[in-house]
View 1 (tube, each protein chain N blue to C red):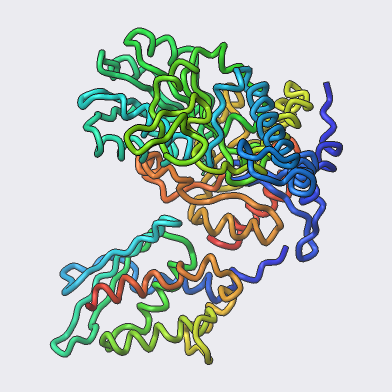
View 2 (cartoon, rainbow over the protein chains, first blue to last red; view 1 turned 90 degrees about the vertical axis):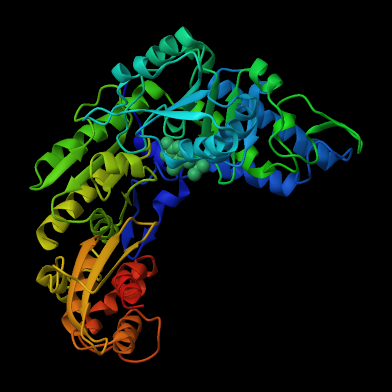
Length: 406
Length: 135
Ligand SMILES: Cc1ncc(COP(=O)(O)O)c(C=O)c1O
């Protein structure tokens, strides 16, 4: 089926902007994606017709706000094929992972082990290091293959009866590689370990069936999934959420407070202390609903078609090499490359002068950069609204950098 | 294309690699990292008895702006003490618009960086490393 990219583009007002006489070629979606009218409208409707705090008021605006906020939870749950009561709104993906590290982490004992991989974003490394400092757990690291995939052949020998959690990127924010979740879950079961996925780079590419995946925790960020900033999601199986103590304390997360003893509200409220980011949550609900309006078979084919166009073009540029697999199989549309003799920041800056937005640097993955002895990479991250003109403008800019900066 | 940043003078400074490399037996060395972008500069200096730089070497793992700045700095560093280097830094800061006044040579080459705030630190990192080495 063909994909009407023009129709998708029209829904994103920012893409029709002209800056300094140039169109916007936005290929930095892995850092933050753009947001469609459907999301902007939902946030505006809340702000202009139902703005109030949630859960606490009896007046009409408060009821509207509460209903919109809880509807957003249902939209997110539908997007992930899970129960709404298993959806915890957080401040972002990082906040969601930290929540698990504090709360689930507090149930772990010294000597228990957590496995991460060499390609993790710092937000799926540092929270576990902080937990290690607090409670004496041990961290094990699965290496990556030369192609930049998590080397699952190396996973079995890291598993021990003390392994309690395996926390891995569902899709790499540097190489776009997709994790073989089934293999990880199967291996985790042999020692009874839980599985958490950092879905920051997967969630923006269509609905998921978390329940069918056999995992225990999933985290993602709203702003990378066409939603607002300041909102993220933690999904966890309800029996895990039930067993987990609160992370932050305050209003809304309590059952009953006395100075002698305070009881906790049931999940998900137990983990949503204080006034939540209401407008952003409503916007994220709208983003999840919007994503479900796309035909993702054709959207994904479109995205991967752009990846092929990009890879073909890069191959023709002297000195350009891909970092990560050269194949489009088992990957999502995130592509890193190097330009021999030109620093990634200079590539990205040159691209900016062609109206092309990309990200350059270590991508918050310093251990991965160290493993390959890289200063960084230039990263192209694609969304369904990108088109051939975006890729062609990028290739022109890379050619220019190759010609002028070496 | 709106390419104002990578003008020939900056590219030439970077390619000149003046002072690039390690010193065999430096009096002092310092390393500076920019945690945001991952740029890294190591500066070695040999000092004479009066505290003046008699030799300088830099190893830059970073972008073209950082390389050009290290190269420009090395081209004027010999014979200067810490106070003399501060004067040179003022030129660099003038070039990128952080200080009032005309930037002296060769730092006037960095004027195009003025409009790119996110890249100012790239120009200043070699100065930070040299300051550490001299302190
Ligand atoms: C794989 C991955 N994990 C986690 C994050 C952190 O997301 P946020 O900064 O929105 O919390 C990112 C974003 O850069 C990411 O790409």
